[in-house]
Length: 361
Image (cartoon, rainbow, N blue to C red):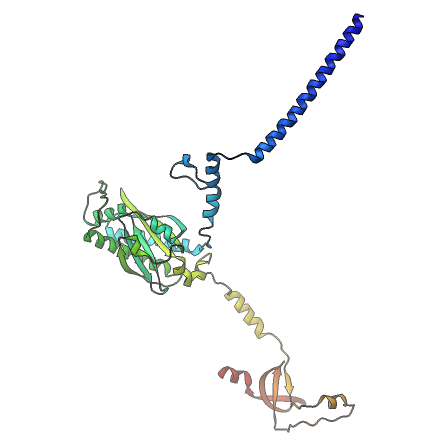
């Protein structure tokens, strides 16, 4: 009896364990279903929304754009690169280093920070005030560009040209307009830079950048629409412990006349023209054989008469021994001359060059 009771108790215990396992399994499935439904309808919190839009406030002011904001801004200025501009501005850096040393009688180092494509309106809004903005004109291209000099470089140039002592950082005065002396000194420096910019473009395309006017208010320096794209070049000018930056803004519309030249990968590259290939092609053309046919005369005949021709039919031509005949290559008349005999063969003596007459006409 005890054995039967033990077996019945054991069977009851096994059944209870099996039912518990089934309940746990069904509970897991229900939880998974709830999680899948919750994940599909879950609402994003503010931090996730900011991360998606690229507005991560925790990164501070100088945060990298990401998410939708990066996608939108990446298509703002999607213009083609102009490889030759890198060479032009590298040449400008070398020329400015020499000319500014002669201009200031000081040790000047010029470096190229970056070349970027920006919107004109964004650049105008980013100019700090007070500022000196030079509007210059490209005479041969019949368009304009901008040059801005920051305050630190303005005071450094004034300090150097007026005999300031080395080793003392120039004092930066905020909130006041620039004086006439400061404007005239900086204007001379701008003219030196424009002269170097013209010399930098000379190997590519001769152009003269002429100083147009000097503005202190960005609203009066508009040379293009806000949405127009432009090339922005930042140059760093260092004079031992002093210096600043110069920004050159050239709209794409200004560079349009020399766009094909700026697309070159190296100086002197020629598109669609190769002197070696031209020489080889010319030599081969001179050795080319071409058939020339001598046309005695042309007669118009009805098609019915041609269909009735038989062996022995004669066709009368309106040609006499003194009549000039045409020498043609295909359908193009080349020469005209008289027919005769030479060494027992029919020959033609050329009397006129029809191609030469067509070229003269």
